[in-house]
Image (cartoon, rainbow, N blue to C red; front, top):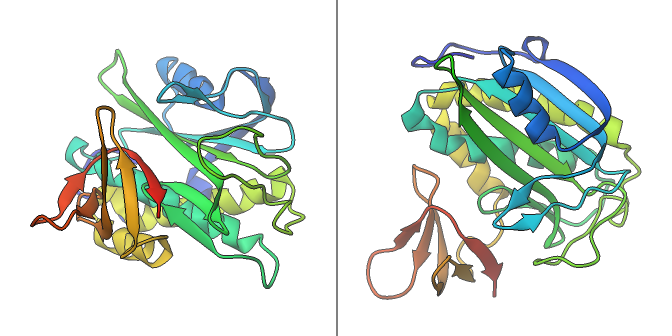
Length: 255
């Protein structure tokens, strides 16, 4: 995928995969390879992460038995369209997790912007990281951590694992689904040109639209009704004081 106005459909055959036994983090490994000249469309998976990613100062849980997978994209879209990539990643991860759940399993849903919940509990987190490369290209990494066999004992949100919810899938099997679903979703996303379709799919899978939520921002907390997302992928919060407030980043709590 290169910069442009949309380049048509891509397929799973356009992506490569390197499986590692251990790495500091799959995200950092992707960025390292990008600096070394990798052209992108590269998946890195690891059985174990020794460092893991961090989001807002919180370390990721990286026990063996879970899925740690990162996708390196180089110049995946014009800069003004990159804001929609987290939504596409969430749609792909949601579809992959749904495919491995047994009949009658609890609901699988997306929590804004890109956590995957099972029965209201977090089972998958997605961390996007970007870096401008010395040769003028831009690397963007989509990191996916899925609680397959285990979940952290201490977490900011209620958590679960696929195993607890009745799935017997292995990390390798789950990754095969994620690999295929991400290729399909990025084809629909089409360097951001297909964001309208992605937003429709995201909304159909979202948890809590129309319900009361609290959004924790770096400097304050806001409460209101989750009114959905706008065409930029920002959360719309109806505080009852007029037009909905658009929020680009924050931690969402239901109820």
